Amino acid sequence: MPFRRFFTTRPFATLGLVVAAWLVVPVAVKTFTRASFFELTAPITVTASYARDLQEFWSLRLHSNPELIAAGRDLARLNSSYEFAVQQNTELQESLTRLENLLRLPAYNNYRLEHARVARRDFSGWWQRIVIRKGKNFGIPVGAPVVFSGGVVGRVTEVYAATATVELITSADVRLAGVVEGDTRPMSYQGGLNPTFGPPKGIVEQVPLDIFAAPNATKRLVTSGFGGVFPPGLTIGQITKVEPSVDGLFKTGDVKLDDRLGSLTEVTVLVQQNPE
Image (tube, rainbow, N blue to C red; front, side, top):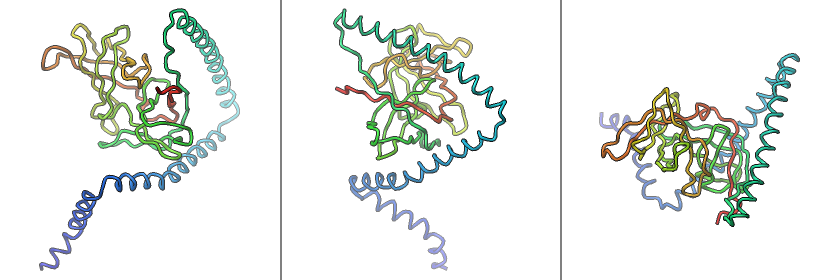
């Protein structure tokens, strides 16, 4: 009977011994082991991502010619609008450079845009992150901001040889300074508790008392540029509700994030060209 009782509890005893041994292992060994694990599994992740791209390619080949012609026509319209936007952006950049030279202002940090494909998504109660198919091989540094057409995606937290991990702004570990569009007073944004299949959301704190928001009258929250990580003016989300905080000096509120954060396939990493 005692032997049978020990046999049933042996898995738990083994797990306890493994956890105890892991706790006494030096930090350097843990870091090396974790990095080695990610480097060993990176080829599998990247290969699976390429396989999905190939599957999508062959699925598109099954479309009829009229569908492809219609898609090409829509793509041509988008390209023409993007070309016009690029021309406007070039003119604005030239005007900004002239003003900086006239006023003798220091040039703003320039960024190199590094587009990357999403290889894996890891959404759970513990993690809110994605893995992209670029790393040290493209000069991506730790802490680099990551964006997409809808605004902020997150920041790079780990970089390996050919992959990098991006912590999403839905994660509670991500905090950044933001402002309401048209206002200059900074407030603090933090990721919230996001269920696996729920809409992405966050929390905003230190909101001035004269700012009001409601589901039918939202306020656009953008990056402030403070901290030197994210450029100013990038969309974080929409403030849908604010209420007085416990101390009564500020307000706290809910931020609705872009629904596309959970299904991104392409992102852009902003790499500073003059980090100093």
